Image 1: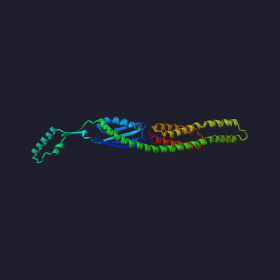
Image 2 (image 1 turned 45 degrees about the horizontal axis):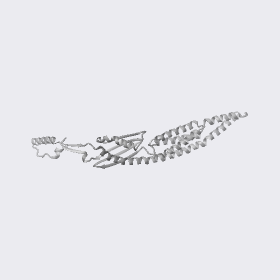
Image 3 (image 1 turned 45 degrees about the vertical axis):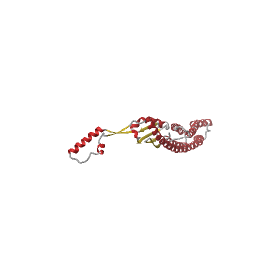
Length: 292
């Protein structure tokens, strides 16, 4: 199924007292480029996150934001340095006596003193934490991929519509091509007759000139290949695999064929159609840049 490289997804999971939130944002990119931002104490899980996303997404520049909002009681350790607290208490008493202060030394005053209360984050159980993060990541990826699918369907419809328009233009060229040779035959015959009014036209020479011109402007092969490329484009859009690069290659080939038709053409009508086809191919190329 066609997927856009533009997407957004958010997921959260709360288990065992821990709560994680993950956001995924992506834009188009030639390759898969994953940038992960996560708390320092979770850096050991960066590779797990990268591999898990890579198994679900093949192209695009993806920014991953991981945030931990709640911690398990076991993750945090709070201790009191009684020795430092005692030093502060004695200093406060000295100040109180020296300046004849009446205020009592309160618990809140001691607790605010630097290094009296120490908060430490214990070493995480990585496997346990990864299980919770993975659940949040699954939710984010589900929303993320669904959005890319929906955007992909819009791109697919637009490309198919333009492909049909290109095919109709190619058929117009195909129908017009034989008439170009016929018109050339009449044009050269009239010109020779005008210059050599009383001289009989050398039919063999005339046929040779027409045959040479017909060979020079023959675009049958290009038309056949161009129509084949349109068919391949349509079938590729039905593929379940990542097709962005293949579509890009097909557009390059189609551009090559229509350019050859334009260079061979000696007809204003065909030239105008070539311009229209190239315009549609450029619009398709722009759309393909955002397909995974």
